[in-house]
Length: 404
Ligand code: NDP
Image (spheres, rainbow, N blue to C red):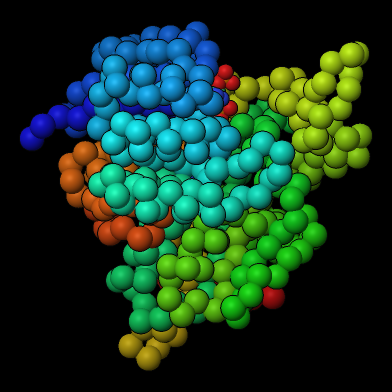
């Protein structure tokens, strides 16, 4: 088999994991290049990957907002696939560069205009015709959620149900990082996501809630009962389109009281705003300033303990019988740090795009156009999750708390 070359863009918490995981699979990824805005961060990851896997990856400085720079780099590196784990703001410019050079594209978060938090796929879905024409594939949202959760849904649809009536995606981080306040992935994106209105889909329409207005107690395997808040999350938009017969889909995430209290104070004083303000004769965006003060998510791993539990609760019918099933993964922060110097949130987001790239390089996942993960065969992907650090479990679901 011809071996593959991958270009990873973004040297943050997730980029570190993608680089390590690609390096672990030498028979597929013979050449790995990590590019980011700040070359020092790439060099640090290059050193860690060498220590952990004895492989030398290439590094490059890149401002991915500048399409021509990305085109030049792609022409030089000649990757089979580009994995974009920079920020959602760069999605379209990196897709443009992939179109120009005819290279497959993967990301883990949908495009975001800088000034409006939207969490919508429409901008990226508009590229479908152009990717199709070019004969290449764009795989959107191939992290954990979105990503693995979409594959769980596709698997339930393909193998477990005649009809899925409802899906509840539950995301619990029961870990402790020892800081008074920190976000587990990019603070800007994380805070934008949590402070927007909640939204879920029921009986053919979207129902909007105030931010964090609805919560339930959910009993997570290995983590116990945790208060979980209803949020809008981008995979809801694509799953509503691709899972047939669905009557309701919701997304829940846990937050500690401490986290929410900090967030409330930060919001009340206006430091989570994303519009520009004038300060000392300069224009600054308060949320970007806050990001500069908060711990780098990539640095949280060292003392992180506890686990993440993320999965999907399905309710539906198989052979005329009602069936409730929970498919989930448990990931341990300290184990992740031991393996790749990262906490579990970056780890769970970084393993899936490596697997997506591997399946594309091997020709197992192929298609021309723009795809969400649930549109592809979930089985080879879910096999690989078991082999590459994110094993999943399927259990009959008895917890009825979500029915309230
Ligand atoms: P970080 O902020 O830690 O890393 C982002 C990296 O991208 C940084 O190295 C940053 O550079 C780099 N970057 C930013 N702008 C540019 C640019 N213009 N050109 C080149 N590089 C750039 O974020 P995370 O690693 O935590 O998250 C990465 C992505 O993964 C985000 O889009 C996030 O939403 C997504 N994610 C997805 C999850 C999922 O399950 N689907 C879960 C967690 C995250 P610099 O160091 O200079 O700032």
